[in-house]
Amino acid sequence: MSMNLYLAFVAASLALALMPGPNVALIVSNSVAYGPRSGLLTVAGTSSAMIPQLTIVTLGLAGVLEFMSHWFEVLRWIGVAYLIYLGIEALRAPVADLGAAKPEPKSPCAIYAKGLFVSLTNPKTLLFFGAFLPQFVDPKGNAVAQLALLSATFLTVCTMVDAAWAMAAGRARPLLARAGRWTNRVTGGVLITAAAALALSRKP
Image (cartoon, rainbow, N blue to C red; front, side, top):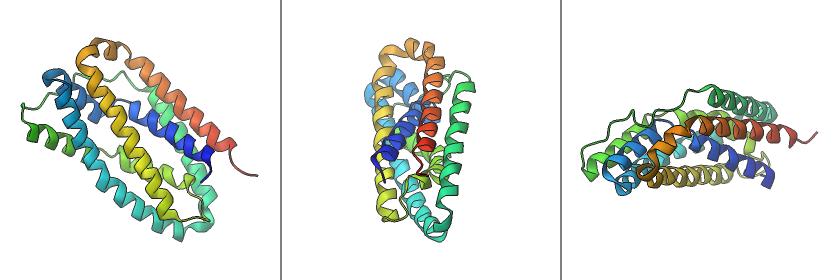
């Protein structure tokens, strides 16, 4: 894949990770209740859940892309449309209530298990990869290797962002609440910009 497409993927992944969802709500809740260490333990749980999800999607997409090799460009434009949809949804989304999730009992096993369960039951990862990933794959290259790189990148970005939420939540929860609307706007703007960059990067 080209460097421009890879950087666009990194930007889109970062924007998606910054958009508060069930994972972030639980991470912030545990971090506020028990401290950053518990927040980071929750991150370990949510990140662990993404590994089998990404493995399944990578192997499944490799077969689909091989079967639909003649429809690569159509799949890529579907990805652009999906990015725009995510961006509009982020702009229209209400401010996330980071205090909605109740903290788990102060047990490392319970905190990790809850993070694992919440992430496993969150369809965001599967939907994002299933509809969006094909446009970044060069049909002339090794699809599995490219998908593995993108999966590892997505996992790394999400883990780093979630860890930042965990470290910041206990000290700056009021600021996070006030910044919710701006987070939505930035996320939406980055997603739409990434879609535009992907569309403009198409070869005639």
